[in-house]
Image (cartoon, rainbow, N blue to C red; front, side):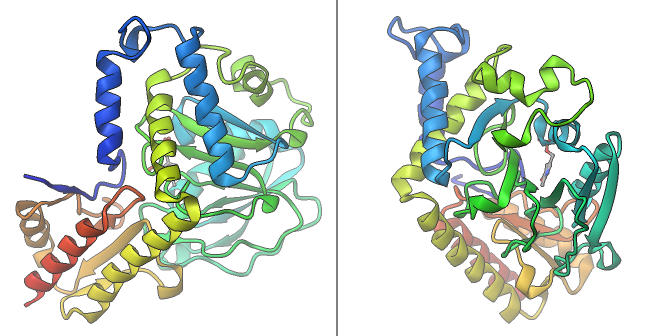
Length: 351
Ligand SMILES: Cc1ncc(COP(=O)(O)O)c(C=O)c1O
């Protein structure tokens, strides 16, 4: 069956990327050795690391003020590592879901944390808009896309401090106003590559300002000085991310990607809005273009719908256990045809 993959993460990758990645596992360098068995200090892998960084810089339009790192430990490690490296006095956080709440918990190990806005009152089904920051704040932490609840920030708060943003589930989905950001991080496994590496983009001038002792491996400056190869980097996930960057570039970059993502999401939300038995669970203006959260009005039919979709080639539609219902993750690599197929199944099940 040619199934469409709607899992939230690890998630869909472009078909051509999977093919190229599997070929590299068999033979990659000039001697025919696999990418999985060669030194990260050899020229084949050094060139992978360099090209990946260079394409990320081009796709996002990053200046040399920013460092680009490939780390391990998932986005979850960035919850504490960002605070350890950046929090001097106080950090402000917007709580938009489970992942924000976890980042808040970890930052508290390193200093004062102020939750300046939260959507917890409505089970995180919207993005709070009123954000006021006190002048002694070092940075504002945001989660741009809430994978579990299906909300996304479609504009950025106007603040005078750098924004530190968890973009794990919408990195590379749209162009960014980089002047607003001090740091961006993302676990690769949703919209950027396979599990195993975390992309960290950080403004170099923000580093080296805290007084605490930072263990070598947890200091961003360590990894900047060694181009992410202070220790053995996760070579294969970085290589697959490179293939994704090449694919993104061929598609026309992030402006084009954003247009395609809007088209796919609009089609799906329109179908849900027109249906009798389904509804989107988030505030309309904050609907995510990446994770479409929806429910059936008769919740007893949820499992039957998921089974029907699966039988017909749409896989991975079960909502996160803390949100229930259904969730269609339609990341960059989801073809338009996959969303069309899902809308047909929704309409058929509805009638
Ligand atoms: C928005 C967001 N942040 C952080 C995480 C945690 O990422 P990791 O598993 O890479 O630590 C996830 C995982 O789903 C996520 O969706």
